[in-house]
Image 1: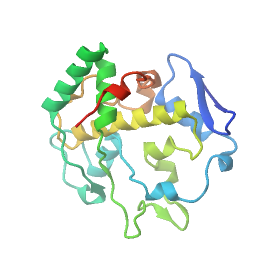
Image 2 (image 1 turned 30 degrees about the vertical axis):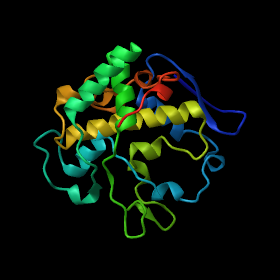
Image 3 (image 1 turned 120 degrees about the horizontal axis):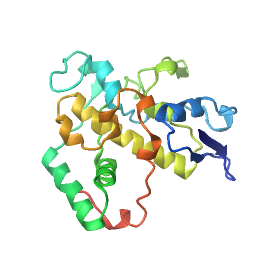
Length: 217
């Protein structure tokens, strides 16, 4: 069960959810929001932003996942510099030590602050390649970041979206062969096979109090 409501600022907000609530349930809830027009400006500005892909989406584009991923589809993607697994491990251990975080939360916080996306390559107009005639030509199968987004979102829902996408970006690093499976630690995307396997509670963590004290170089 998930409870989405309009807050006093007219933004869609996450009021609560049951402990067994999955990412799939969140997506269904967002898709079922009644008055979408009040939450979307219709300007298409978000289609000009970077469109990051989570691991399973990257795998579909490339035709596989893991170190043996085929090269097919790579031209459709824009790639950052590969991450350093040793640096990730050092950073996670430092967070566990300095802020007494559980490993899962330390990994989430590290990945959130260091996620450089593998993204859809923009078209000549600087937009998502699926933006055509003022609408999305791939709306039913659009990326997770798009399915989680409305222009008018409350802070809790917006923050949850960012954490989900950041962890999905790090799973993409495994998909393209930059990381071994064990380097992902407790990343929920690495342990599941569908959005029905992933609990949103694994992402819904507040790092208030340590964010101001932490800088990633």
